Image: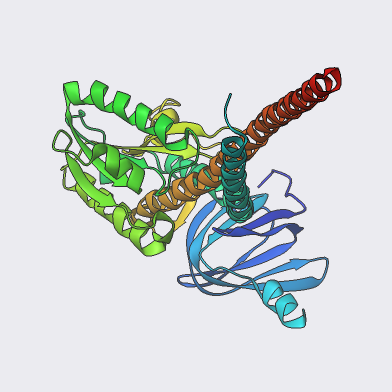
Length: 99
Length: 296
């Protein structure tokens, strides 16, 4: 492809209760129905249904993960939009445990 | 001139009422804060999901899905979302007025079926003159996920089996604390494809120039996404309506408390005037008596 590849992916993970993630990341891995799907900036457009699994994303060598229970994602060369069903993410559970 | 005791009684009763409205205001403020937080937190979802679906449909081109099919409006369903309880100002009456208007207009041309949510809607429309399909009157706020899902599934079925040609929803949208906005939304058929097809009928109208991939396939994915969208819209309307209800009640009770305060002020002034007048009168009588005695 002659087009310049974007440097980042804008990742948004939204569940009915709240906005879980809104960050610029370098790499995303989605749990699709047929297995994990690695996504880098410049990926071709894709609509995908998600199954059960861990959504992982990498941002400046820091890897974070998020459990996902079903949902849908829209992948464009410069952004990834994820709609998921689950209520709370790992971070919330952790902070609740600490608090 | 009213007796002092009557005025005192009135002041006392107004004060009691004021205490009640004050308490109700406090309660609905707390409930409103909670509902508002929920609405605001879930807004990103409500706002981006339709865009997402629009993108999906636009790149899919013409998809023959029953929920996208448009028909002549002969049988129409109207869903009215009100609250169970009153004392919330014009919250319900405005909405019911709008519903009445819609009914008058639509029932001329087509068979209109009503689905009522909330006691207030039931009181107004559960009469022989109206064709009521379903009614939910028990504690609307307990009408949690399952019931709403059930209702949206019912509507989807009705639409797919051609028992209805369009579904409208009338509800109070939580716009600001001061005034809810009455919203009339056409839920079915899903019409967002129209604006998209305006671009041209060829499927190549993708902004990036690349046709997206679908996993697993366009049809299985849209087959899940479209009903999901309807379901999601319902939850959305419902939580907006609840937030708007609490906001309306909060404002109504605040006004009532202020009115009671004004009333108490006016009554106290009158009471004091009468008291003063009677004291003056008594003094005068004593003075006259003293003077009359002195003259003897």
